[in-house]
Image (cartoon, rainbow, N blue to C red; front, side, top):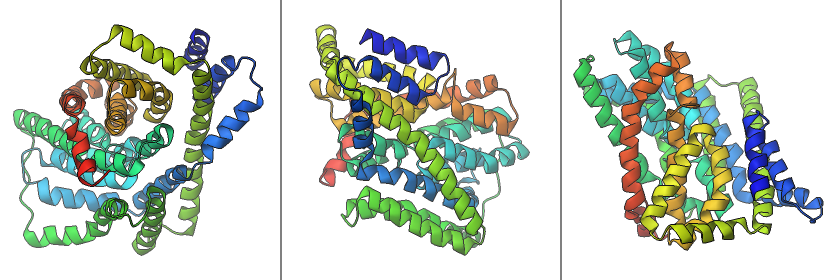
Length: 420
């Protein structure tokens, strides 16, 4: 176990691609087993029907962004929320909720919304650091509110129902959005950010109709899954077909754009799947060396309380989220945390939402903070300013995390009510 851990952390520390580090760490633990196990484990892991949803959801998100749908969502959110103090900040968060149901990626949400909202907020007198921090925080809603690529990856690795995971993320995602909105409103009031004139009912209705096709998409996905009309993978295919129709209707996405987006989605998918395949080989080596069993035994020797174990899990995930991209962190920790959570009676659905929630918070914290790097560039501010402005939103998210951790019904009530 020590040799595998050292190999993994040394390779990552010197900048070797993560899939290579995972594979080398697994190779160290191979022992006397035949080297063909490497190929067998990688191929068998990727031979998974639910994983087909990954490229489909990525492609769907790119299609919707290319179609200019982010602009219509922002416009509608501004019609609803722009009349309040700090209305553009509230619109930013509202648009983040709507857009989360389209892309399922925090980085994609932050980039798409930031390009529209950060310049608009700066023009209206908002500080660049605040505008970027709000955008980064609202973008973190993407992987929590369904559909979520991270939920798909966790479901594949842990065996948990992906459909149930999607439903379990709804309440925490909405609660996080409310918490972010409260912080944005308080800061806006203290700094006297502008209040915009109320938009009339007629104009609000017009903007709603323009945004309606995009707003329907997450409801089609979730309702179809919950109603048993299609599986998660089939819902991704339906979403792509729907997005293609909207893209054609928008006249902003031609055949060349579709081909470019296909290529982009394929490249992104390859990057995700090679990490999954390498992590499967490492997981096999860890299991062969009885590392999960030793981890459970060690935890039970020193931690008797499930509440304390949850605190340790949260701390571990937050630290990992500071240094790893969410997908990479999830793939590394899931094989180790799943048996530990089971030993302490922690529901796999709650664990999945906890993992996704914690790792997403890493996008708002140094030393990496990918979302803050993106918004710092868009807002033309320093990374340090982005970190300072993001801390109130990070603290609010920690409050939601505490509820999610110690009140299981917060994430489990809705899936249980729907029969999962």
